[in-house]
Amino acid sequence: MSPRPAQGPLDPVPGSRWNTAMIDLALVLLGYLAGSVSTGVLVARLLGLGDPRHDGSGNPGATNVLRLGGRPAALATLLGDALKGVVPVLIAHALGLPGITVAAVGGAAFLGHLYPVFFGFQGGKGIATGIGIFIAAAWPAGLAVVLTWLVVAGLARVSSLAALVSFALAPAYFLVISSAPALAGMAAGMALLTAWRHRSNIRRIASGTEPRIGRR
Image (cartoon, rainbow, N blue to C red; front, side, top):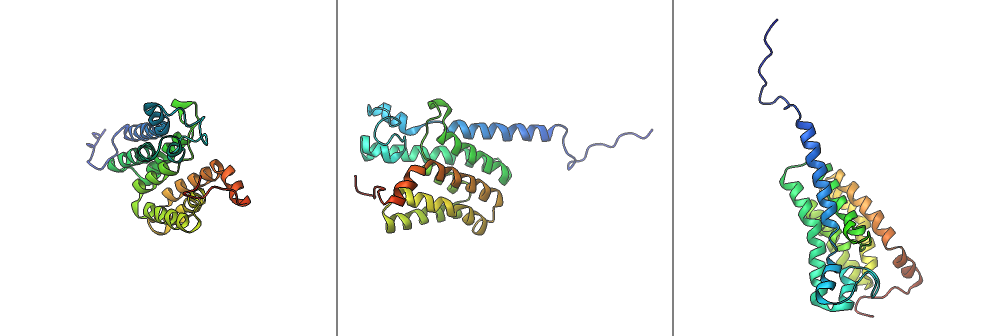
């Protein structure tokens, strides 16, 4: 019986696929937990502004926090919401994980913002977190999303319409600009969730009653 050949440097390490799967799962969980940190609720509590999930529009995003506490509170909410999308995706990139894993981590962070486990699954609409995810996942496509938001918002003066249009175009940007099919799939799922979370805004846009930027 001939002796078993020694393992070469390119041979798969026993258990390596299991270890990789565990790392992927841990990062997806990290993404969801990071997204579940509701920045708007925390900022409002810190400044004694009440609960943005129950006051104002009932949305714990930067726009409602702006109504309740002014620009500094809104800016803190905006940055916090964006960072909780950026950080998990950048970690996945730094570990050299494939696009499908990066997409899963980004999607989990987005879901965490919409349905946060720490805050009774009552989250925001995900625009700042989504843009943070897009930029961290592939910045050229993410920049195109931001520019689209700015153009639509500047022309129509309706923030929700700008969000809906820019997120609807995001999958095409990831395919054409960044050649990233997995990230395009992530963006498509996020666009559908965004449309669902903005269904009341869509009805107001259709009826012409959606508030314009700069007006109460």
